[in-house]
View: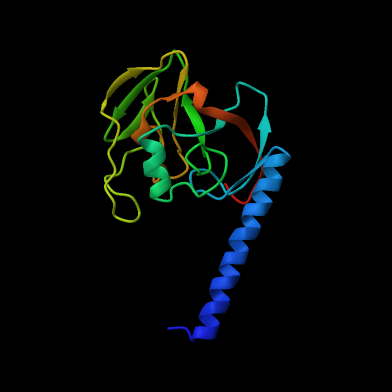
Length: 180
């Protein structure tokens, strides 16, 4: 156990670091830059783009996924989404006209099984997760499927199913990546 004085310094330093990161993120967003600290994609900086073909998007999930992702800290507190949490940053893996198969092995798009897209029963904290129902889905106009092939623990279409394109806030491209 830390002595009281040291514990207080660690708490203050952690709070200051989080506050600084929040300020930097807000400033970066003003200039069209998104700082990604999630594990769904490589850590780094992503720039907004007007290219509708961009494969990376930032979106606010709808209920019940918004509450679940915010209350479980899959998304950090922020100002961008109506529920008071930051948007999710995910790659688009299927667009209108594609055929998606959801199975215990993962998400397949047009017959290709995407790596690391199998649903897990429990999150990293041991809380149960409900996978999207297995089956064959045609991607409808006005929707996309999103999934991380970078991290098997991603909270994406393997749990939320397709998302509405109206949920997309920004399209992004990698600018500077720490690794990946």
